[in-house]
Length: 159
Image (cartoon, rainbow, N blue to C red; front, side, top):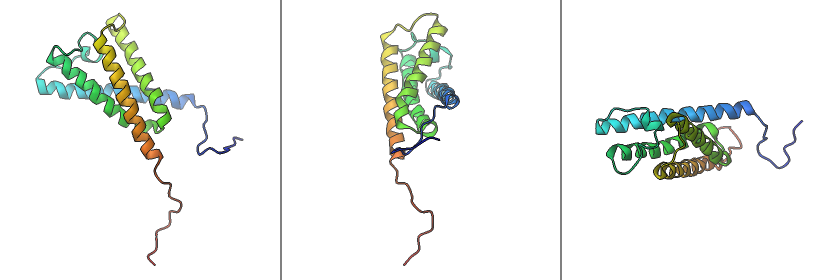
């Protein structure tokens, strides 16, 4: 029997839950990133490609296409923060899941390009996206964690 001495929640090691949350966050990351890229590419009349997701050499400030792709990554960080709010629900775990998602993305870029990401723009963008996603997700989760807990569910009577 597990004792909850001074704790609000019990913490049980559940690897199936953790792996499923990681898979769900990866799905949200790539699904939303693909949608953002498609929507922003419609604005500049450019056809979306898989290179926009995984090619680190495409990102940059010198071309409109590179700036639009970087904007999609930043907007995706904010969208994924909502994923942290709805599916992770713990402010303490936001940074863990954010770094995990971006670590898997780095591995995907490494495999896709057959070389380790080496451009400074890609690394700066990833650090900005990690910071945005983690801080926004943690802020949203902490706001819901600090909501008042209703003590009774009976309707209030007017006296």
